[in-house]
Length: 319
Image 1 (spheres, rainbow, N blue to C red):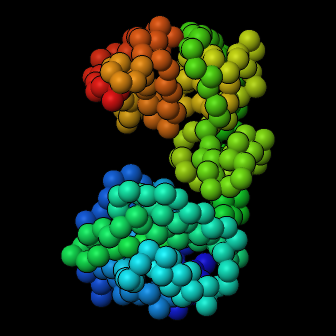
Image 2 (cartoon, rainbow, N blue to C red; image 1 turned 30 degrees about the vertical axis):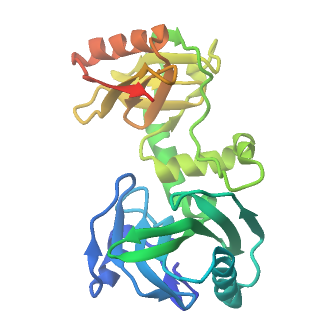
């Protein structure tokens, strides 16, 4: 599914760990945090010198959804640098569909962004407010490639999610509610809004895209089944059991817990400059509320009782 753009093979849609083998002749750099990723010393794209490329996917065995380049054009002025970048990229893929300029005072800010759409790929150029040191070189811009066809790419994972849900909810004769709590903050369905779009909130009215994102970017986050929804609101969290398995549900999303491979983390952001926040990650489900939340603390207590474990609380200040 890779595509040639700017005299380079862009690897979006390829499986991350399989694609990494294509870079055998490139110097490998340490990976960054977050999603699984690989970073390599690079050469050029759009006839622009490139210092580093990074490929990133939600999991090692899933498709690459992001590829980035650190670019190193130089010029005698900021305006000429912008002109040179836009000219070189535009000579390959035409004029951008959107350009924004910003006032800057440091290199860590962005002076200009430009965006193109090529087939199912969104391309964004971010010109920095100054030079940045990247792997022994000077970078003046970042170039970001992102997939836009999440629904298509996610189809096999949606089928896997549907099969998992059918298996879990095949027999519901023995489900029972253990606890229902209310929290202060409104709980939204899991999704990744596109903040580069004119209306990022539109994803909340697009259940097909949200379902695709859930299947692609998570491995065991379920839709909350209909039979558990009675009386729930956007502020409700419910703990329940069915056929000996335990679940936590919001109005939209559900995660199983109670297994030996649970990944449960509690973070307490203490009030400082900000008002603080209490949050808990229950495998693929993330929940947060105001600092000292009675609802989340009650939920944590119930989970610890069911799992017979005491989970550490990671604290920091809301600075």
